[in-house]
Image 1 (tube, one colour):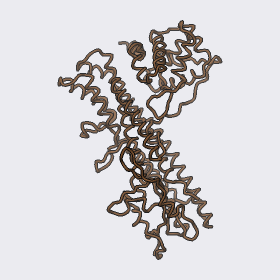
Image 2: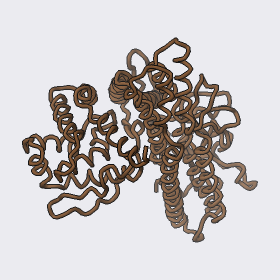
Image 3: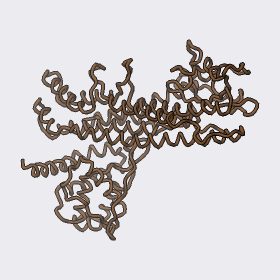
Image 4: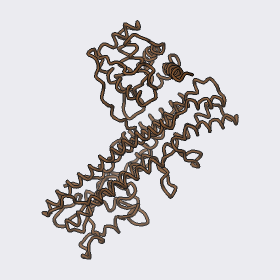
Length: 551
């Protein structure tokens, strides 16, 4: 029977948690950049414009809310993941005990040992969230996420006051520096820094490996064996080092004698485990980024998973790409390098404060993704687009609609802050309900004078179709509270606002440009120069906000 935590399984286990934190990076960068982009509405190219931006500032509570949301989900996922690890280990070792014809206790590993490992893993995850920050000023300054917006404004203000660069250049420079950093974890005494998703992957892998190790070692006692079989996988590290065990390809997939657990018994016929595989070393088995594990082995009773011949041919042949020769291990490292580059440019895209920078980032992302596909095909490697995209939490339930398929807004127009969590939730539910509506386009056509065919095409483009938004695969537009409210007013035919009509004009023009061959982003930028729905909607909700505050 195969051990349930093969190297491929171990590699995939932490990915969903890592994606949560990549999304958090993009969320914070987008929130910061969205406020900085308000400069387009100030019509000033002065220091006063930057100071005016502070009134648009991102609140500390908003940032904390985004962090709490990501970490809250991650804790739930971590609990479920570790519970699954425990269950699968117990099932595997119970079957192993049956094969060896021994009686195994109900709980193989003591509960306090399991709890200690789980607690340590959770504490590490908590430490990551407490110490993450943006690294700026050429690595000299570490900013908490809540300080990043103020820092960007301060930096821009100083640059403009110097007279060296323009307002827009100053804002772009500051946001690029934040994007180049991403959220970096500052949690190591050595001063070493890692991107937050890398640190999360390492923390989760460490916890899972510790649980697996505890089960393996306790099972060795019950099975009365001092031998272990090490797992194997294609693309194992094949670089030699001074200690002898750095080349994992040399020792993977074989059986070893564990001297420290032999209780004085003489060596059988296998190499020594710790000395050969570097157990306990950061460069050995279970060390940094190692996906190998081990399980008990009983000579003359059990058979090895891999023969020596299979291990010798576990990797595809070396290959040449763009004039450079790659081993299979080097190819996997090149894959990781391209994935990191894509994530870097996605941060750049999220932080872009002007159309030129945004388009440049999107172009670079497309080029990198194309190279990723070409290189992976040449290397005979499975592509892993999940390592380049941000995790989107599943949408929640949808409110029941009326028999006509039309749902009432659930909020009086302007009653919610469009950037609030409540507005976001409402927009998600409303978009789902629109997809089920059957008479909305008839009513909008009757209320606006547009043809039903035009309204049908707008609905299809905005709510139904999937588009190339720079992600690993086409996806629908993210729900917008402002657009949800506009759509409902157009259905009701009451209190229709000028920007509601602008929405129809904008989407008709943008969808037409996309059909003509422009990318969605290019079409949106061009259309916004003629029909700027976003600008009009922001002005509308700002007026409501001012009326409520009595200003």
